[in-house]
Length: 313
Image (tube, one colour):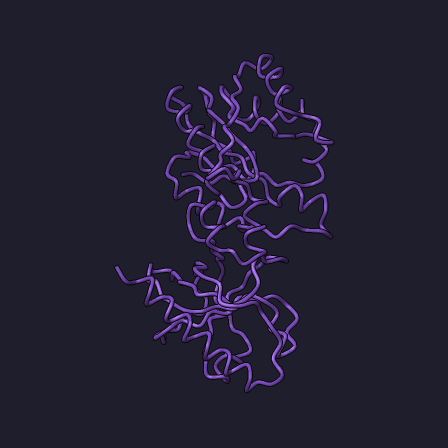
């Protein structure tokens, strides 16, 4: 998969392409179905599949003071889309004031028809685009006839009667229902980030932790969980993690702190992927450091027991 940032770096598509676009936050089962549907059409037409995503997400641009917790950073979206193995070109478009002011017709003319030479477009029938969200599926069909591309509605994906959506996944995560989120994602929910130096408080308490930079204003998860951590070299380590502000020590910013079991390697600076397996408890404030240490001991025992049980055939 080729990653392209901005229209100026886009390669030429002399015969056109099949395209789809959206936020794809989470790259959940519904998104995967859309991408595979578009890939099937690309093979049918004998054309490359180009996927357009936006950064920041449009809702983050329009409501910066009321952001929704992301399921995936840009790095994670790119990785999960690439791992599907069906996309030829992933085009990341900067969502800024100039982009937000494009009318629906101008967006189609400049981007879909002009830059991509789209021959076929796969899109959700509830998709809205353009200034003031004026563009819809019917307008795309109309403009498709004008600019010589066909438009196909992407099927809504349901699982056990539940519509798969990023909103529904966030709802599961808010309740610490990581199993429910994983069912809709098609994989465990993960947070990805670089291991950074912290205040070494975990080591002082007897439980050294890897501090993972979240680079997100809101985390969809809070609490203590059993986790697995995948390192840059592919090594997977069991452990327990806390996501939150650490109220017992008067923490302010949200952090992800992971205690890896039976592990003593220097991984500062590494990008790691932390998968959330099972909830243990909500984050809470303890009356003393001694009470916190006692609870961490119980968390570690519970997490080890869970991992040992999960590993049994």
